[in-house]
Image 1: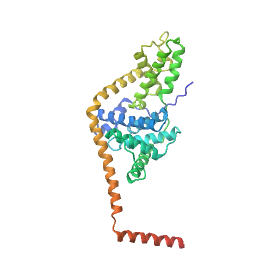
Image 2 (image 1 turned 90 degrees about the horizontal axis):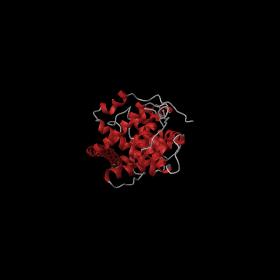
Image 3 (image 1 turned 90 degrees about the vertical axis):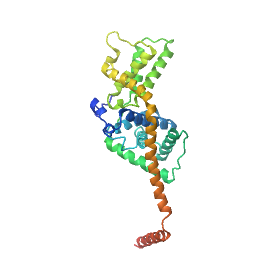
Image 4 (image 1 turned 30 degrees about the vertical axis):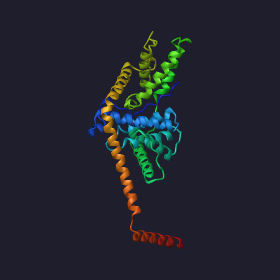
Length: 312
């Protein structure tokens, strides 16, 4: 028996289309590229941090929920991806330190943008700035989510549904290898769906049945349809399965168009991060080049105030 938690925050088609990013003149393709960029970064960082797939999937769901309430033009998707992963570690109880998450995100970010992964000195001014930005992004994330962090993923439904279908399909030992391939393909489709906002539009049961439908068509495995359709057993309709199928087609069509917008995404991301780095270096330069008289006067005032406080 699988427990289903109904999420009251599923979006309608109109709400899913009229996103805040679209209102800020970001096109559908550009929004898809940046969302996919953030989700792929969450996946890569989760693998390097040795997290389970549940943590990475939870972080991607948080990422999509946030950008249905806020615009990509106002919040950097790299830091929001880091904050989503950091929060998912806490929710799924697979804790990682902030410095570990920031270091891995910086490495993946530089590897994606320059082709060579760079290590971040976590104790430098830039490392401090990245940590503070991730902490602030996590606060914004929790505020927009309303501290609603409950997530149900389609992966566990896929396992339960396929075990049910296998017991009624009469699979013999010779077809067992084909069934394993069928299971893996369904799992891969579920991971691909996390790159879209489908998790904010339909319950996970629909996504699970849609992934099974697509995988069965690819592997040419007949599913039971004797008395009733197999998806009706799981209380899913054909409209939801078709929505998953159309979303899968959209993913692979958008990937073909991604090349012409990838340079735009990289340029925008680098400009934002470089501006933050310049601000940090400017403040550090001001502190290092402060007038010696002013610096000594400030230190004397601090020491005198400390003496007065201790005398009291």
